[in-house]
Image 1 (cartoon, protein in one colour):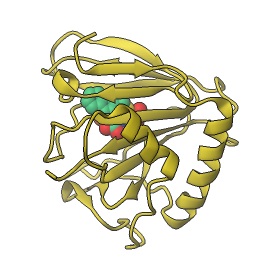
Image 2: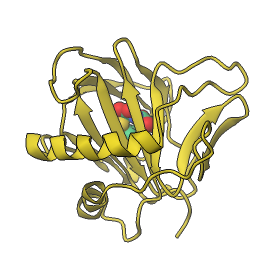
Image 3: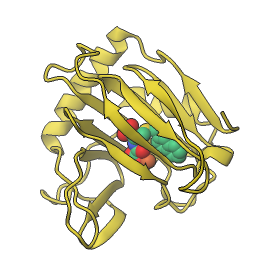
Length: 200
Ligand code: MD3
Ligand code: FE
């Protein structure tokens, strides 16, 4: 695949994944998953979301944006866990800290359509993603929506770093393969994406 894409299978072992899930469960009590809706139409996403860090990505009828508070509780987002900050420092090749960690939760049947991540001011920073739980079929295209695409399976503990020429590529999640992991008690998949939002 193209430059700037780095796939690191099994970055975290099972023990580390379990420790991270325990930490996430606590954070999610403070910032529960909510169901984002599409701008204008109000159509619900099939993915539920929360965030960690100074800023969180939210979507509602008014549009997509980053904001410091949970859209339903008004509370600030919990901090990004140390293990996740450490992951960023090790793989991002970027000198500044991430500001946002979007937490996506895929239950059975959830998917994410082809899109680009373009709500950030700083595209020189990569997006770092970590998969937990059931395996997902990830789809990656090019810089134009109509271009060729290919798929990659993302399993629990895998990390994907999207920087450089890959930072603005179209991508999405076709589906999640139910029952492929025992990590999450209730099944499904959690994906964390770390981003730098503002220019440092
Ligand atoms: C390729 N999440 O939150 S992560 C998203 O698995 C998002 O939940 C998917 O796309 C998920 O925006 C995919 C892998 C990923 C993240 C960012 C990218 C791939 C990317 C940015 C540019 C290109
Ligand atoms: Fe994305």
